[in-house]
Amino acid sequence: MAKSISVVGAVFVDGSRFLAARKREGKPLAGYWEFPGGKIEPGEAPEQALRRELNEELAVDADIGPHITTATYEYNHATIELATYSCTIVNGTPQLTDHDEIRWVTAEEARELNWAPADIPTVEILCR
Image 1 (tube, rainbow, N blue to C red):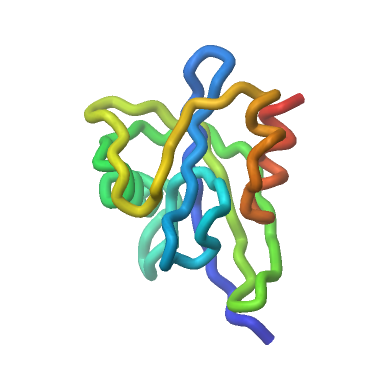
Image 2: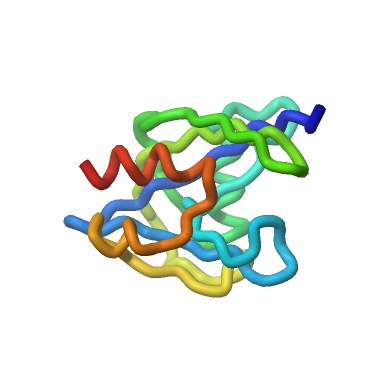
């Protein structure tokens, strides 16, 4: 049985668009689009983990807002439980560190991207 990993993802919204990030080559799920974020470390609350991960991955400080949804997906390497949260950038401009591309997408544009499976339930909510 694959190990279970709890992760968090940030949904940044700008009008009718939201931020999508594509994993760079050499990373797990390279080439897939996702909501930026990462693993919850032992002793961290989900919101703390997301704030830390956004600083590490995008070099931004963010306010963590309401929980959107939690989805579980069993990959070959692990079972991922992804909790997504509505977030607001309070300082900085997103930088590429863990991803090879980031873009603001409309719901229509998001439907054309190759999303990581665990992120799809959040995409579906945003595209309603």
